[in-house]
Length: 414
Ligand SMILES: C[S@@+](CC[C@H](N)C(=O)[O-])C[C@H]1O[C@@H](n2cnc3c(N)ncnc32)[C@H](O)[C@@H]1O
Image 1 (cartoon, helix red, strand yellow):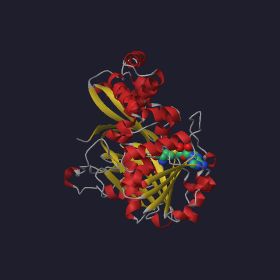
Image 2 (tube, rainbow, N blue to C red; image 1 turned 90 degrees about the horizontal axis):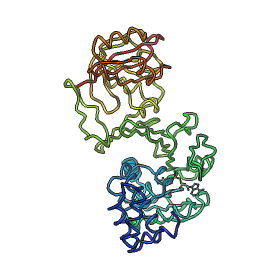
Image 3 (cartoon, rainbow, N blue to C red; image 1 turned 120 degrees about the horizontal axis):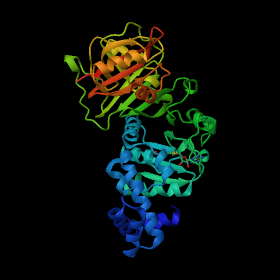
């Protein structure tokens, strides 16, 4: 899409083309284009409308029903923050007293919109003219245009004295190729600028890749890792007075209701105010105690593991590690927690393909899910080598116990 096509899509004729595209999209793209042309939609507009409808469909996973009125490019959508994460961040900023925010490198505006929805005045800056136009269009579509001004320009030139907080989500993909950038020095705006923002505006938040090296976390900043339905989606650095704890793991459950009562009558570990959002905090330096494999194994959410909060979770679950360097926790009781999956361990075997195969055959196990930490085995290869035949399910946990390769045969906790 280019600026001209975006402008065309935002006319009445464009809206009609988008409606028509919505009715014919989803099947064969050529037939859809032919149907639009037959309905009198010019070729260029038909192509733009069909692409937009397809991007809106994909964007529903990130934005929910709101996606149907937004405008996207593929790279803009890929880099955009999901709504559940952006809204929570915005509410936290607002709760910290932020009333005006610069969004430096706003992309198509997912974070800017969330901040505006939380009642914050947003000054958004975006270097790419089309993406800046998308952000403006999206602010209008979301009904928050009065709170969001979008400027097309270089974020490094923005006068940050105009705002009381700054958010920066630097581009971590190469323009053109879309390839991921792993070296923060190659981010855009560059890392030195991004990380130096906190010296100019104490209330700075920086969104970073979840693989961020802990050594890059500035002294005194809070580093937060965010998981959504088991996927690690991002990390953020909360600077200055916004830092509340050294480390935080935020676990969002989009797909399931926020009912996290305990099993076996234990108290719930549900924390935090937002429905479906759970937050575990701590120092990031504590060590969990080590002990034997016990009746239940917990597989912590990747946000908890990346935030180095396994010891804090162990304390909540009254659990221990079986190996100091492997993040599986073991406990005598099953407690339902948003921060980990719980499985009941039925067998603990030193790893041997032959023994495992024999045992699974005896149990008529035909379907296995394979989890692993601290094992070099390739799950798909193991699955093939097991040559399973049967109708029973099981979970296999490949790990190390007292430095020995070990497999745990498990069942999900009802
Ligand atoms: C990761 S995206 C932002 C996504 C946004 N937070 C969202 O959720 O929609 C980063 C954006 O920064 C923009 N950008 C990169 N360098 C910039 C600069 N120096 N000035 C302004 N924008 C810049 C890129 O064009 C890209 O759209």
